[in-house]
Image (cartoon, rainbow, N blue to C red):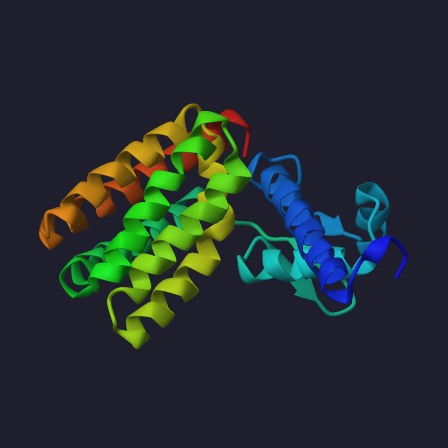
Amino acid sequence: MAGGDTAEDLTEEKILLSDRIRNALTDEIAGGDLVAGTQLDEQDLASRFGASRTPVREALRQLAVSGLVEMRPRRGVIVTRMTPERIMDMFEAMAEIEAVCVRLATYRMTPLERSHILRLHQQSASLVAVGDVDGYDAFNRELHEALYRATHNSFLVEQAIATRTRLNAFRRTQLRQGNRIVHSREEHDGVMVAIAQGDGELAARRMRAHMLNAASALDQYIDEHGG
């Protein structure tokens, strides 16, 4: 191929493009620019983002998994109506799941897993320093999923990831509220200290508070942006 691009490079490029499209649409839906009932046309989106239909289709598929859009026969892709009450219910449930996960993980993780999780947390400082919301969001998913796996309970891991997938878009959006990205890392720091001390109960309380703070930040973001 010209320029030395491999099939793998091109596939990764499409994945990154679909992520950018998904993130842009997520912000517009959460911010109220794309209201419930709006029909999203693949070709229009492809033209807008200068992309082929493939990454657009993947972005819409991911939004459908998160519940932000619905794919309807003969009507295409429609922006879903998500009430603040429904979103807060989801965050409340996620807070309890996360609390259980971090409590078990604190007592069950191996020294290698603990080292990996603490290193991930340390690496996030540079993302916060430059205000890289997309980068921090990707890190955030990696950190939380590492904690799920450290429970060594495969069923709990499946449930946590499934619930988180429904909330991914909203968890990303709340990072745009004020200094939320800074506070998020500070809250992670408190969880990491509890983990390092081997105090699973404290880690669980701090993780629950972390998730509920994220919910409050999202609620404020939606309110301020007319969602």
